[in-house]
Length: 289
Image (cartoon, rainbow, N blue to C red; front, top):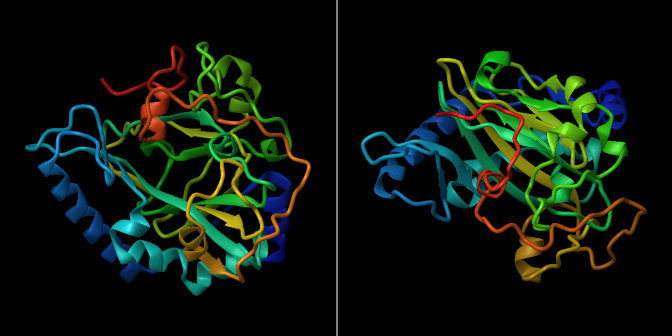
């Protein structure tokens, strides 16, 4: 699924796209599950442990912008990240020991799918080393019109930008005026449904409003080397180890010289990146009415 040239491109740029990792049958099953989940969201008008809702969501017209921790919601999402094809790619990029840090399903429905402001994942969950990446599983054909994820190459070896607001609390986004040059260099992660992007935890990225008449659903997995330990701590050691994808239990974290800025004091609005970023006074992307 991935060549040595691809591995070197990832190390150089901090992002690589691998086409056609998921087959048609798996895509069809995932889309069926998502349709059922969206239909089920009609039962709530508030964010829950499963749903993060779009502004304007109603029981009559359900609008979901995120399924939280989908691997806990339906087994197919756990099966995808543990599949031989995905593990082979991960092993070549950051393996052999691998741990799932988390997952989410960001859903951009036609005409209103919410944007995600510019940020680095590393700001949300710094570890003892940065052999960590995010997988973006394209569940729809993705082009410039339906809000692809934008990643700026080679930002994964540079600074960790300030993700705090004027009040000193974590805000989950970077003041766009400080990264204008980096934004101009960003490249879209596009391709056919079933393709996957892999971007480094420190790579700068964001995504715009979906202005097309097509959906853009992106299934995201955050995967760390098993010897990368979260600096915010491990609350449940058994649960922590249950997320191992390969390799043995590690109790000796690997420490490397990486820049860290802790996401503290915590954001005043909790729940998802959308909620956290909504408190910011300044944004880059246009938002739905």
